[in-house]
Image 1 (cartoon, rainbow, N blue to C red):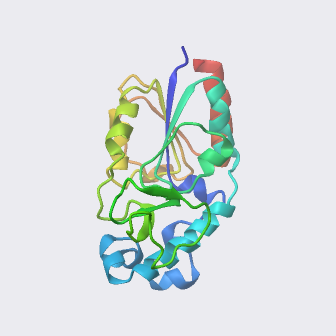
Image 2 (cartoon, rainbow, N blue to C red):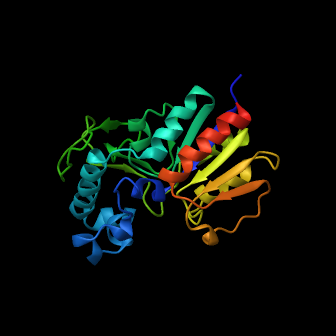
Length: 232
């Protein structure tokens, strides 16, 4: 039976594929705070502005290509039961070929009805405007967990972490909760690897952790070879 390899990925991984983080988007969005385009209050105040912001992000994500780190994780499925838990809202893991990806904060390529959160549509890289309606007549909104909203997938993610045989953290500063708390669900004896060029930012209380001070695109291919040799 294959060992369960759990990967928690964050924005640093997508940045290596050219997807800027919110605060690095530049242009028009430098004039807006996160509260003005990525919260329920922002949606209530100016929904078209929110839609415009996510239309730009959606197109960028649709055109982005996975990097060597994404590819390395997909290839690990030959040797492990790989489950990716990502804070990212792009589909780069899926584009690389990963088959089990849980999106904690939603997906840019999807929209849903404001009246029924279960009524979800995959629109790829298309734009959404105010007045575009779901089948139930509700306005379409981004299928994104905004700041201030509950994270509905956090419990399934915690269950996945509880069953990990190996745990990898890549591209996340582990500063955003509740996602940052997921590493605590991995058992003390579970080997943990943190791949990130900015290791001094981390504050780890968990045991059995090894830090790999490299980018995702550089560090994950190296770690993948090592995991196959040591744990398969």
